Image (cartoon, rainbow, N blue to C red; front, side):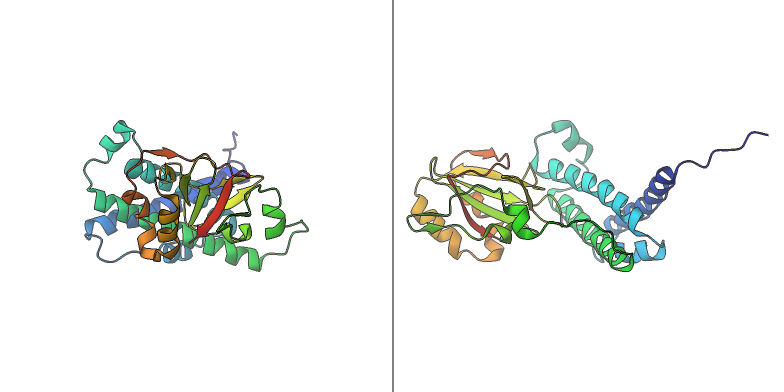
Amino acid sequence: MKVKSIGTIQERLQERANEIAGEIEGSLDDYIKDGFKKQPSPYSIMYMNETKGPHARKLLDIFKKLKSEFDEVIYGEDEDLKEGYSCYTQAQLKKMSAYYDVVLKDIMKVIEEANRNRKPRIRKVKTPNQIVKKLKYCEKDNNLESIDPKEILGKMQLWVYNIKNRKLGVYFSEDATGLTVKGSSIVAFSPYKSITKKLRKPEDTIKELQSAKKSELNTFMNKLTTKSSTLNGRINKDTILLKVR
């Protein structure tokens, strides 16, 4: 008699993660139908589905990709992709993207809870100092001074200024887990939202940026009329690390 294969452990984990992801996606559909009045709780959905750490790690991969797709729809230039979401307004798309941020935060919460409850692995975890050790940046230039690079870790935004080409840049985290550093580069940033612009009056603009409120930072770049270009993540000896949020 032929025995039906039940799949590998990883295949079963992925299948279960896909089922839970379907439940969360269903909650987004309900949220849209409700006119975005009451935001569902992804954490409650995962709790009711007895989501374990291995499931949550696979869910993290799934929803990072979905969040990235929404960012591309909102901020990118792929007309075919935009056409696929043309039934939604820009405001609706941003609310849906914000919901995915909540999903990612709740997934991280499940992962953190699972890590606290499991037997610790014998492995070396890098300290913040070790993570930023190879980051090459400009510590000080005239009246400008870089922040401690360790402050970048886990933040939603990083503002940088290149003293050589007079370009101001902002890195936006690709999701709710925040920015981090690898070697001498910023990683885990959104390639669609993270931009740089040349400053006509650097001293005045940077002074205004430094005193800007948190609520003003998301739209600060919109006030600059020079042409924008994308950031590649690389930090060098001409880069001042201005501020984080």
